[in-house]
Length: 125
Image (cartoon, rainbow, N blue to C red; front, side):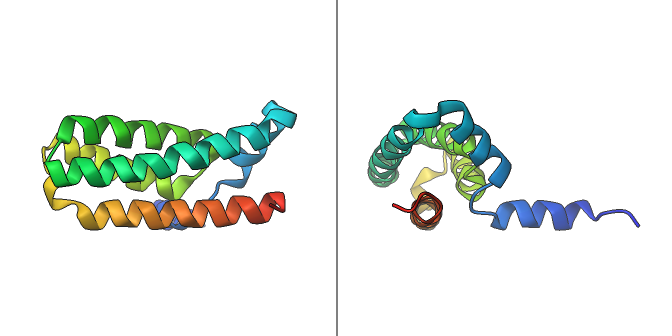
């Protein structure tokens, strides 16, 4: 029986952290991993603030850059859901639609909270 690719994609969209990607990064960085996580949290929280500001100012160029940076950082840690939402926001900025995306930015903020909770639980922080 073949696997339904739509089911696999839906599972990825609902996945908070990709175990394999997260573990690979932890193994690669070893003792520096906790520092990376702390920087990721701090930077990502600031990016959410900056995205809200860009949305209020209808600043698609800045919104695109911020969403792109958040997407890349999230991909490195295996934060799948946050990566996908950031990608959607990045695409909206490319289409010059950031002013209509307050709800998507809040979804990104919620996804970041879920990532933080999941990582803290995994690391016992």
